Length: 144
Length: 414
Image (tube, rainbow over all chains, first blue to last red; front, side, top):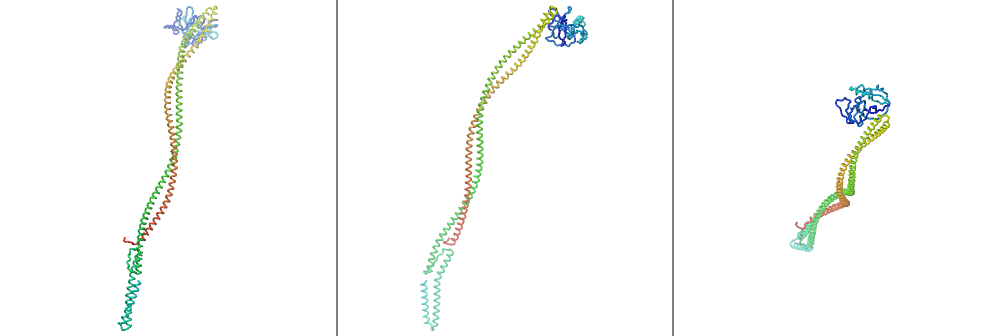
C-alpha cells in the first residue's frame, strides 16, 4: 500500500506518491527567472532554501488554468533535488495499492516530450499516479 | 152801385119822358115823334148803359187784373179802386187780404230762407260729421287692428315673458345649487388644505424616519465592511490551517507506523478546515450580497430622500395652491350667493312682470273686444248718420222746394 496526494490539473485529477512530497506551500512570491525553459515559472525562497517551480500543466501539455487562491505549490524531494510543482487544487491524501508500470499503455497527455506521454502509472480505483522517478530522471538529464 | 143804377135808370126814364114830350111838340105826327123819342131814348139809354157798365167793369177789370197778378204770386200789387160800391168794398178787402198775404209770405219767405240756410248747414254738418265719423271709423278700424296686433304681440310677449320667468327661475335654482356647491367646495378645499398639511406633517415624519434609516444603513455598511475584513482573516486562517493540516498529514505519513494516529488527527483537522473554508466562503458570499443590497438600499434611500424633498416642495406649493383655491372659491361662493340672491329677486320680478303682462294681455283682449263692439256701435251710428243724412237731404230738398214755392210770391222789389 502506498499513500498518495490527490490534486487537480485543469479538471484532470492526478496523484503524487506521498513518499516524494516534502510539504505543500502557498502559491506566493514566485520570482521569474530569465531565459528559463518554458515550463519553469520561477524560483521561491522557502526558509532559506530556493526551489525551482515547474508548471506541470505546460510540461504535460494540459491547458493552463488561471491562478486562483486554491493554487498550491507541492514541494517534492528526490535525492538532494527539490523542486516545486504548481497544481490547481489539492484534494486529499489516500492509501492505494500500486499496479506498477501497467499504465504505460495510456496516452493521457499530448506533451512535446515523448517521455511524458507515458509518465502515468495507473493505480487502483482509476487514479492516475504520476511516475515521479521518470520525471526526475527527465529533469536530471536536462534534455530540454 | 145800386144808387148809381137807380139814379141812372131814373135819369134814363126822365130823359125818355123829356124827349117824348119834346118830340110831341115838335113833330107833326105822333108816329114820327114816337119814333124819335124811342130813338132818343135808345141812344141815351145806350150811352147811359155804356157809362154805367163802364164804371162798373172798369173797377172790376182792375180787380181782376190785380187778382190775376196776385194769383201769379206777385203780391206787390197796389189795388187802387176808389169806388164806394160793392166793388170798392171787394177791392178794399182784397187789398187787405193781399197786404196780409204779403206779410205772411214775406215771413214764410224769410223762414224758408232760414230753413234752407239751416238745412244747408245741417246737411253740411252731417256731411262733415259723416266724413269725420268715416274717418273715425277707419281710425277705429286701425285702432282695432292695432289692438288685435297688440293683443297678439302681448300674448306672444306674455308667453316669452313666462318662458323667461321660467328660465330665470331655473337659473335661480341653478345659482342656488351653485352657491351650495361653492360653499361645499370651500369646505372641501379647507379639508383638502388640512389633509395636505397633515400629509406634509406625516411626510416630514417619514423623512426623519428615512434620515434615521439612512444613518442606520450607513452604520450597517461600515459594520459589513468590518465583517468582510474579519471574514478575509478567517478565510486566510482556514487556508493556512488547511495547508498546515495537509503538511501534518504529509509528515505523519513519513513517520510511518508512529505517525499513523497523528496522521488521522491531521486529516480530521483538514476536513474541519475544509468545512470552515466553505462556510467562510458562504459567509463571504452572503456578505457580498448584503453589501450589494445595502448599496442598492442606499441608492434607493437617496432617491427616496430626493423624492421626499421634491414631495415636500410640492406639498408646500399644494398648500399655497389650496390657500389660493380657498380664497378663490370663497370669493366665488360669495359671488354665487350674490348671483343667487339677484337671480331670485329677478325671478320674483320677472314672475310679477309675467303676471302683469298676463293681466295686460287680458286687458288688451278685453280692449280689442270692446273696440270691436264699439266698431259695431260705430256701424250702427254710421247707419243712423246715413239715415240722418238722408233725412237732412230730404229736409233740404223740401226746404228748397218750399223756397222755390215761396219764391213765386213777390212781396217787394228785390
